[in-house]
Image (cartoon, rainbow, N blue to C red):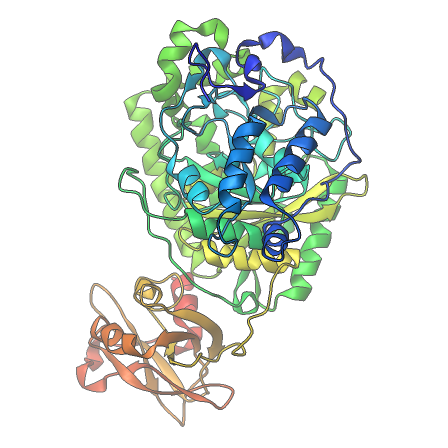
Length: 620
């Protein structure tokens, strides 16, 4: 609520102008290393629906947990208890089953607007009181969630380490003076310390991935545009994403279902592409270990190689993935003109308030002045080349799994060399938004000396459901579907076998997804087919029955509403029609086969030897 002078009354509000604490002399109470026990969204939902607790009791528990940890650099502002209890009472008058996030507390990174609350970006002189709430926060509140407060960050969301703040410098929950990671430091700590089940953060260069990796929780950097960035103070607007952090993958998925929605006010908005893949059928890309960098950190390397060994045991389809184009794109972020994009938002403030900005932040932003318009276009051209290379790589894999971080640092190590250490932290994350990828981070055990290790699952744009499915499998959160078994359609569905442009990641796959299609399995045909390629500007692969001289051809099986089949056929190439396709396991399913009456024999090329359309494309 507002005071007489119009300032927002929040806990810790006095810190907005208190820069004397930059030396972090305030000490907080610290629990044992590692993430603290805390309820998940499912835990609280079950407790509410069984009347095991009330929203008011949960609110008081959150505030007690925040007070118990002391001023440890997690929160910049926390709502008044009276406001939180008023919200709790409003919810308690409703049915707990009526809202998907009923009574779930959450934190918001302090670069995202909440009406009536100061947005500081960890720069007291920049702070302003927001007049509107960001759509991502609005949707959460409308779904029954409880906004608790604003979380700490690296100033102007510039950094991956968490030390670049005028407020208390946060530390990882693993202790040992390890950094928390940034820039979304407070959001990660609010979850890892057990104070809230989930938090909203951002990701431009890795801010939604490095802090979860350093604090033993789950983070999602969704596809750009999937969650509205309206109400977010931009870091690099063309790259910025809203990110999510939680204790497990199912909680991330629950929150994503609420906040992923198109927003006409956001020029980068996108529709979510839904799929329900079986992780066991996906092609898992792993770089050659020699391409990985751990910066001399042998225990971290050993922890990652142990995790890779588990991947090799748990997933059937593991492929070696070239990593060079990804790294080359990452180098463009801070060694190219994208750093100048930060000046479009903060350049005027930096010029008029030079003493209000931390020196390391000022140095980074001012480096943007050296780039010209020619540099921008040259970098865009180079990025376009790398995007083309990476698109080719996705034809041979469905996800790519990497270390989330190559090493860790203490606070003192980062303060002694802030630029080099930050660059090392972003080694595996800097390229994510430049290449238009989505990514999830999950814990992967500990190093021999007790530090956190983490895996990052990456996918192409709009493959968020696929990435989350693999992340859930890696972290043991996967809940098997009740029915049907893998590769079988549900009642009311038909199974469709596809071999070419409708495969996952191919141009016509969207026709399946937009009509409720679900990827059921990847398999092969019986050894009685040949795969031909038509000519023309848009070659089409076609499946031809040849019982006496055929081979097994890779196909995907998709479950579709029966009513969607005629429309999908109408949108397909005239070179194909629907027929029965014999599979390797003896089944036959409806599938796309060659319409021989529409084929010109002179334009056909036999590509059977490649075993499938993806393999043919990868070999070109």
